[in-house]
Length: 253
Image (tube, rainbow, N blue to C red; front, side, top):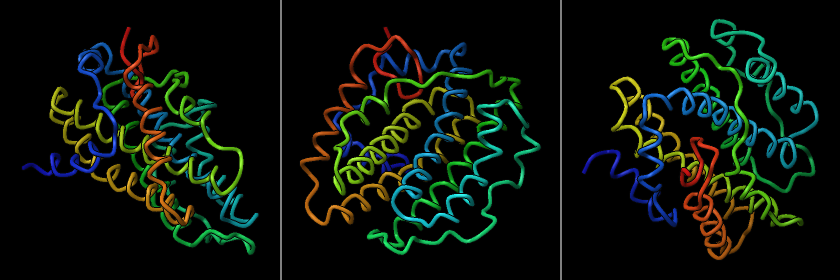
């Protein structure tokens, strides 16, 4: 059994469905590679931002809010404000000061530690994707958000700590699906992209487990019913027709 097959065993048992071959057929077309890479770039930043928002809302003090915002600023400048380039992002992936928990936070240091590591890795992946795009002369000229994450987030409960548990479960599904799609797509890409996507698969596999571990810790009780609920929501988004082709889109129309 290959390393990829081993990594996928728990992921495929966690997800309720596999990506349809119709999506893979669309994704492997050479003319769609720019769409995949642009969306992948945006997804890496979004994944980091999601972790940042969780930290700011639930775990860290006010001074640490500013530290996190400063960390993200050059990446957000590039993606949203078209300021900067690959060179200006070099050596930016670091924290200027320590991140401290807020005094009244009921959530553990584990949430801070896991989310900070996730942010660092997602921003590193952002830089790597941009490096590939620059090398292949694929410009980033903007991309709109797909329905995937929004389609799950609208099911989040409105009271705590259930809302945080739901957000962490959704994070686990997004990371697991990313993993599964990297594995589906990698064999159809050239050697450089194949190796890159397989390397990403390793860290994304840990990210989904980290989110799930945190969800269980915060809930303090069995969450299998809620996981099953979101598994069905996620599968519906993956298997239903979707006119907007993206990395996490549904069945191509």
